[in-house]
Image (tube, rainbow, N blue to C red):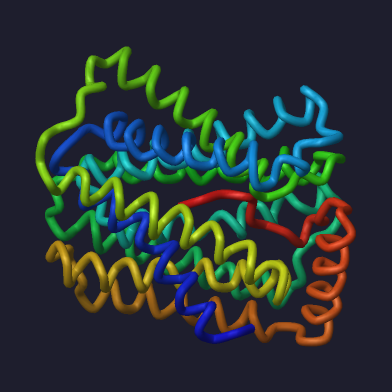
Length: 319
């Protein structure tokens, strides 16, 4: 895997949590997400209907409806819980680490649902990652952040929404072009967040510069940067390698949040994040032969348009 691409991907994906924190003080989550997705949906819609117009051919209304549901789960449900948790006082690093357990939960369900369980070595590495989540969450809760105990459950709801989107997406028979799926997801989320903002009377954006800085940050860095690099690395290196990078999001976000917002970063947090890094190493190097075979198979299935198997534990999402 190209190291520079990996570094750029981790930074761009982590920026989504920082952007949520950046905009949390100036507007409600519904307002921020509405104004993030409205211009995004417009730009993607124009591109999808002009530059990649041919990619829509052959898709049925059922295919598009499935993508709309996937978008509602993987973007609307997931992002709303992330933003809401951060707005409640949960640190960006802890939110990112809880989100990083998604491969473990998806892996636990991959065997019975899709018939391709994760190897024992990978399970050990993913178990290390969950242990890190528990330690960091406990440290964050004990740091006097002001967040209620139930606020730490909110990111788990978003993570489960992401898992549901994963399996719904992987059961799709049609091979949908990334630009098409991204457009459908963005339009769906724009409609949902606009309706939510209208229902709560928070449509009007604040005049503060920090709000619009957060919007630009989230659209450029988090969506185009994170989502675009995700697909590029997936095509070049395979699914297993992409999933291992997900555990790096939490340490990067925790350090970033500590430097930018003064979020707590003590010894307990460092231990938990170190376990997350060890999880990356274990999963990445666990069974080299098996990993290489899985990656080559995943890349082949991706290029030929066949659905990815259960080894793909990360859905088509944007941070």
